[in-house]
Length: 369
Length: 80
Image (cartoon, rainbow over all chains, first blue to last red):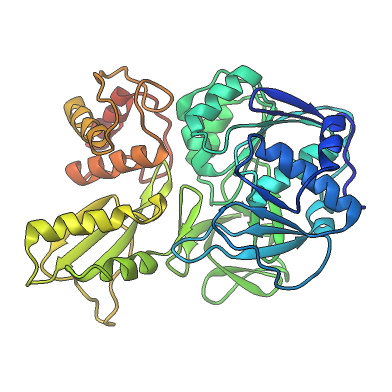
């Protein structure tokens, strides 16, 4: 038994309140596959987590209902989550329930009200759900397709005290300006800039504000609470080091996150590879280029990630058309082709050029402007 | 940069996504207001404005804005 559900825990989902006792009853009759099709997907997830912690079976948390349930190896007591796939097929990743819960402290008395801003079936979402269950807090779960504006409305109505979200979530949440007094503000999943931290401090003067750095392999690496972007240079050591390529390595593994030292601070400068984070989704511009090249009217294409104040980055594309293509038809075809990509991967601005410039190395110059 | 450009580009985004086109004034709230747009639409608006003006008011990071008029003013300020 790896999961001790605090009896004070409660879930607010779809206008309904579920107590810890309600969820235990629900756990008596759950399937090992939780899907997003139910009316109360978070209640179903919690019931399933309770069930597997008691009977030691595997749990498949199916975010994309088209995905096949695979059983790569039978290691009971694992929570299988789907990685948010980009253009490829979503992959399953198994997590030991004991590992997911090991850093979560039991309730210390003070009951908090958490708003769930991550997809409940994502790694970050499950972490928030487990933290609230074990800590005996109230968890407020918005509908799965809720926009940040919807969440702001729900927050006004339910008055959470603690919110964890990506920098992209927080920028939009600040713009939506809910009437709220928070005790705790947590940022994770993308690098945080000083402007956002300052805006959060001004808007939520009573909140403890922290940003978390985590990697898929190492989990949470560190938490920064001093209100400044990056992290103190004094934290660098054998486990947390800067490689000769100027990237951060954690326990000897290169994270590909480029960093620079600025005075007493280590600041994040984007990725060594071309990966960018767009509204919390990891995107590789090359993948989008490869996809656009499958369009017959496209002779060559360069996809560039531009820094963006709302979503972190956004893609733009320069396209050289095939000379034999009919221009009007080709442009319409390309626009339709782009619409089939997931939203974060769609270039939002297209410019049509004679040819894509290549640098001296023969590589497309990809430096963001 | 005049507020008219913000209004024009915003109207275009609403039209492109077949959202209701409403009257946009400098006081129109961008998110959580009368417009049916989300973060990615707003990101698109900023790119369009940056490309149209050649200005980058967010070069140094995030600056909070709520209304169409406030966004226009950030571009005006960046023009110096």
